[in-house]
Image (cartoon, rainbow, N blue to C red; front, side, top):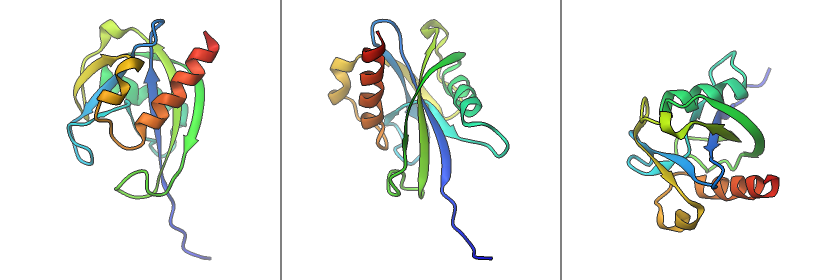
Length: 140
């Protein structure tokens, strides 16, 4: 049997409110240390992507989320400098008042779509955020 390289799998979560504000975390670690990113992380063996999204949101933001929509799958082989990583992105709702940076996050903040181009964002998360905003606006 051939030996296959297998990409890593992650989940990213766009947590938003009724005014289209959304939460980003500031990364504690490389790559992209001190850059803003969507909450998210690696899917553990035996875990569903949906459960990983909910777990990662809680671990990094302290917010319990309800997943709303599956946005897209992002699979460009060079999207993560650590190696080929595929992410499944979701929109989610949660109580912003519960937000507190935890785990891999050194800070957490609320942003608006109008400020998106002013923010230094990690990975391809700016594209993911724009895709999330399109879906959220369409469903309002």
